Length: 181
Image 1 (tube, one colour):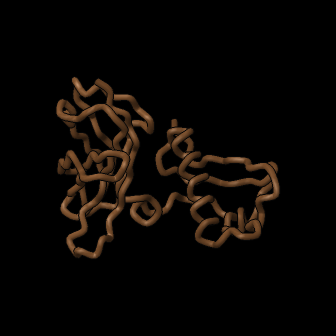
Image 2 (cartoon, rainbow, N blue to C red; image 1 turned 135 degrees about the vertical axis):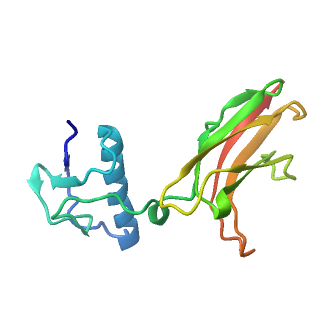
């Protein structure tokens, strides 16, 4: 039976925000702790009670924490696109394909995957794919790219959400890879 509460003890002087840390940054730091605890214990969206040095606390980094904390809305605290593969620095043979996958949420589900030389010259591959939309979560996507025509070198693989407004309000995640012959 899964527990209905995760209790996590943090150590150190974490009651107040350190100098130079803003309120939003502190809230995101606490959010990351909550999401990491939930992922580590595999309990989904179970609330997380935070203790400081094994004692109850009313706040962590200045963020209220007297009650168990729930993870925030995915679309309010996460980037709307996140790459899982390729990994940063991955070496890829141009005789084969490259699987690009991750999770995203975009207008009409549209995610665009691009590959361009690391020197910033023109995009050499642009492939649309579909994730999902209209729910407060990220949806998986995967696309296999053909690298046969790419000369050896360093490239940036990026995934970005769609922005129908034309105001460049999109989310992007990228990885640098090395293509070999």
